[in-house]
Image (cartoon, rainbow, N blue to C red; front, side, top):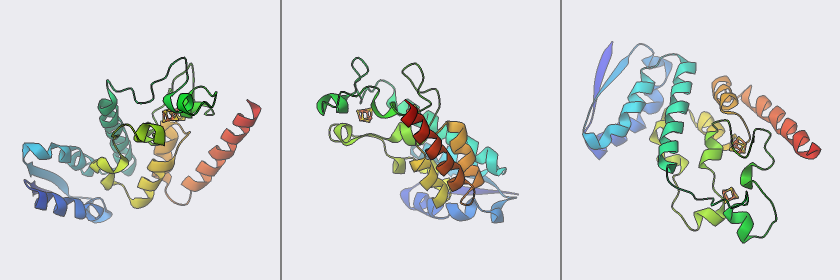
Length: 195
Ligand code: SF4
Ligand code: SF4
């Protein structure tokens, strides 16, 4: 079954967003969404696309990858951390003598860069950067509203983890994800101590 929703003004957009918790639920398992939009509401299209993916895991993967690409395009040509000889803006300003910025204690850091795609890390900026620049925020990405509040909380705070692990945390939900996160926390702690 298909149903067409109209998003041609702010009121319709608010209405559509407000009902997302229902649209993503099992009640709409067999309903496919079409949307009639004005060009300025093009950002609704990935939401509709994600709602039409009825496999829970595939939907999570789609949202994750799509959001990561959006964030990546926002950062093209921007250099907020301004690394010079591996020392970032904040560590230069605060004269900490530390290298590799926020990633210095992470087991995933490899060859001076991050080989994984972690949304929490990608959206994190310290106060030195935030005081100087307007940075895209988690709340700016409306596609995340398709996720549950617990999944959004995980996505926002799952630092020092691979993108694949974050996706699995989102998939496993409130009973298993915290155990996985605590396990990784201790693994990272041991890694940090050994360094
Ligand atoms: S967010 Fe701040 S502390 Fe982290 S790498 Fe950038 S400038 Fe350094
Ligand atoms: S997972 Fe996060 S903390 Fe680790 S290297 Fe990547 S961006 Fe840095």
